[in-house]
Each structure stands twice: as C-alpha cells, then as structure tokens.
Image 1 (cartoon, rainbow, N blue to C red):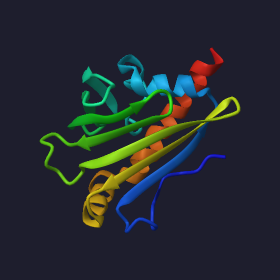
Image 2: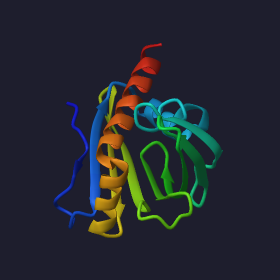
Image 3: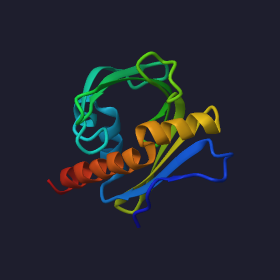
Length: 162
C-alpha cells in the first residue's frame, strides 16, 4: 500500500496529511528522521539538497537547516521539537526563515510497526485554511511532501537491504 499526500477535507481544510508504508523496520525509519547525518540524505523534494546547522531531537530542541532548491534559492527553516517519543512519535513546530511566514505549522509524525514494515503518518496542521492554501500554492507543499517521502522510501529501503 502506498498512499499519497492529499489536502485533507475533514479538518476545516487546515491540514495536509500523508500516509506511507515503508519496506523497512520502524527503528531504521526513526533514525533516518532523527539522525542529522541521515536526514540530509533524503529531506526535501526532488532536486533539493539540505544542510543542517544544528539538530537536537528532544522537547525544546531545534533543528535549523537550509534547503537549496534546484532554482538556486536557499530556503531557511527552523523546526522546534515539542514532543519526542522514540521510536513512535515526533511533534514539532515548523517555521520559515524569519518564523513569520504563513508556512508556519505544527507537524505530527507517527511511526507504526506493521510486520517488518513501517507505517508513517505525517499530519501538518496550519493556523488557518488561508495559511495551508498559501503553502500549497506558493511552495507546492503537497507535491513536495510526496517527493520528500518518496526520497525517504528510497533511502530506508536501500539501508534495509544493505
């Protein structure tokens, strides 16, 4: 089963939700998300590279990174972890370069064991439908999320085999 991110209609159109099944054990998928050396290998849509400046995966910890787009534009990002429950759940606040853009949202990522596979659910909750719409239209958030999770799938599948 491989479902794609879609704009959710059951939460006052303030959410983007993606569910994926990865052919890799949960601990491996968790480490790919929480290890600064691994996350830069797959984070971001196709054609993007990610550089991490700091990553402290604990409640109150911050992940500061920049995504370099294929258009040559740097996208500064800041994630503040609110909840970290290894290897089950991450909750974080995401902000743009100045933490004032409408791209700010709260994200919950859950990791569920399904046999030798991992079901990952990522739920991005925006302050308003306008903020969600802005992020989808300006940054292609739904397609970008699909591509990012596709890259994660390739990364963890390759690591699970080796």
